[in-house]
Length: 376
Image (cartoon, rainbow, N blue to C red; front, side, top):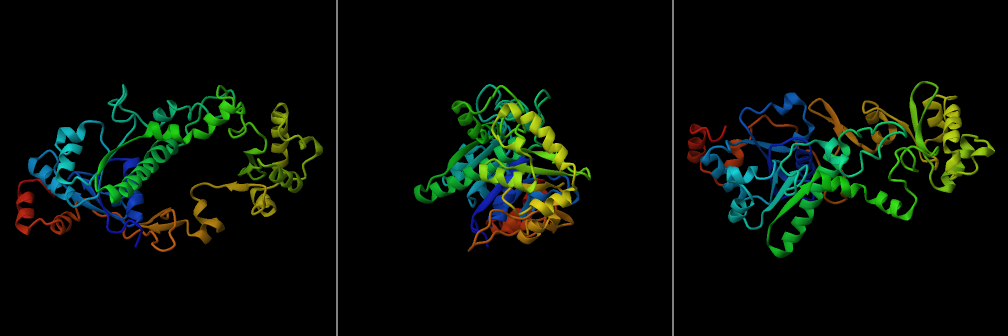
């Protein structure tokens, strides 16, 4: 059983980073109960990986009896995940004040794009907008070209879901000593800003030009930190930053003397062109045979379809299959209390009766709630 075994998390249904956070907590052993609408799409048909390990309960939160049922569930919970815009939970009667009145130890964790306050708090947005405000999107792309969205990894997942998990775990540690709950304001724009910490230091040090894209050591300008096409049209990546790693790159790729001055930025464009010509002389598999596992800091650029079959990922069991979907395995790994995925996605409302019964609802109460349309 995972390190969060014994903790109960109520996750109000949402999309993106909030369900991701719930998935990670479930992988770590928490009982995660997702509160759904009766007409929500079936996650088993949607192949939504984030539903794994969670229980599904349907409550009508626009009905007073449904709201009361949720508040009774909160009495038995450690964490509630709120994925809505600011003020929605308060309008429904399930905001922090109402929930924490029932359970003063509750961690009321809120996931939004712009945060709970500020001039943009109530505006709609997506990952691309949140990372736009932090410099992350501006910095991503080639020189002279427009910024390139890095999927929705930086705002939604790294700056959102991971930040929310981090906050929840910290709050649970604090509650263990204080006996008090608290509200977490996790905003994707804040998380994306935190992910940019290194570059603020680089800019202050004078080793990063924040006004330029594709002009710095980690943004594709350096010939020793980039991707290159191979003879078969596939790609490899090189990250030979440190001098000893760069020396091995020069040795294994048999680079001429003109590559000796690694950090002469005036030479980077020309060296990138020449290195591209060299890497096009062999296939990806041939470069892998020559460099993979060395200190060049080398890897083949794999598609997400190829990644699960790579020997390193196979050996680490980085991926597994569940409900017909190949997906990432739980991470990180614990030596004594390993994480696990206990089951796949459940049908909408499949666990409603069992969860309510376990939380103290009598059978007659459950039938009354169903008759009134408060649960399904």
